[in-house]
Amino acid sequence: MVLLTFVVWLIILIVLKVMGASRVGCAAGKAPTYPSLESIQAANHTLEREYEHDAVLEAEGRIKGEQSVTGDQADENHEDMTQWLNEVKVIEKRMRRVRIVFLVCGVIIIPASLVLIAAGFRVLDGALKATQQNVMATKDIIDNNLQRVDALIMIGKQAAEVRDAAVEELASWCPNAAGGENNLIISAEGVPSTLEFIDNGDGTLSVSFYNDTKDLLNALDALEDFIVPGSERVEEALLLARNHAVNTYNTFEETSWWFYFAVAFTILIVVLAIVFMVGACLAWTYRLPQCFERLQTYGIFPIFAGLLGLLWLCVSGFAFALVLNADLCSGSPEENVVAILHQKEIDMDQLLFGMASYYIEGCTLKDKPDKPTSLFDDFLPYLESGIDLSQSFTSKIGSIDMSSLSRACGFNVKSTTNTMTYLLQTLDAVQERTAFMVEGLYCSNFNPIYSKNMYEAICYDGVRGLT
Image (cartoon, rainbow, N blue to C red):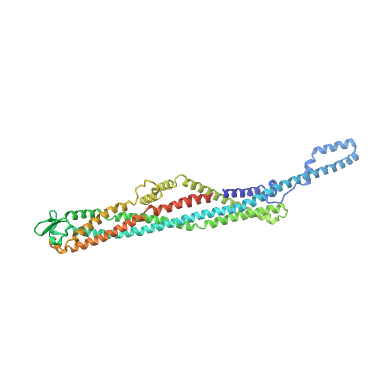
């Protein structure tokens, strides 16, 4: 609004200049021109006066007529002079009013507009810098999640190899227990009382590992590929998001000069407007040099008109931006942003689109939709089940005397124990990395940055700066 008022004032200056001194007098930046006495006399002496003069000559004679005309002429000259002075006084009063209005408006509008426009630009510049900082904060969070998902992919590939080796060994870890219910006959001295067993009455016990081995193998098979492909897909989407953030940040960096350009541009127009005001003041005091008038008319005026046209385009752009900004912030900004994303959904990576929609709108809903990265949350229960069964199996075979168990199995089970220990360590690492990944993708990491930028930088400072 302030910028529009400033532009209107500048347009008034141009209009006054174009109208010229013949229409607006000194308001055009030229010295005032008063009506001459001759113009008044010419307007008053018409052809009818000539006819009356001929009639007097015929009726009264030439000498008397000349004396009469001479007397009448003196009276007429006095009347013409009086009329001329009255005209000049009227024009001077009108000029005085115009001068007062012009100076008051110029002194008030130009400095006030300059201050308010600069303040508005500063608010906009602050909003853009805040947006830039929020973009960088988002990029930092994305970088952190890229490190997490990269570590998860690495440990997942390692865990898949360890799991495959464990499954292969568990399939034949105890050859003597391969058939039936996998009952092993073990000396009673090597079996703790906490295990389930059948007392054979001859100093030996029957212990079964069938269900334990079967459940463990099923749990390990359920881990499949340790969501490595899904993690790689998330990593790809995060890389795309990071590239968008970097490009956006670089765009802000490349256009950071706009604030200083806008201020300099405004100051230049104000200086030219002040030049016109000085020219008008000099014209009022009859001190306007001819060279200054020509410079003002043929040099400064075209530049001023061109800059004003450019300023008008800028005002139109600001008005358009204000309408878009107000439309974006009306109602629910989240729904408006997601609607814009839907228009670009075809050109966007689908997982990235889902993640952006979720963190912008989904996190604010009472009934949150399914998270696009729910594969990590869904994988944790399977992983925990595999860890629990591995711990149970390892604890069971570890509670039995190793020598007794090896004799009963017909195989040295020490390697199986070592494999299970290594598997447990790997599964624990995968669980830690997966939980770490889930934490990195919390709504509390992304949505507050979006909300702060949308409501404070765009919808508040942006609208305030544009208006």
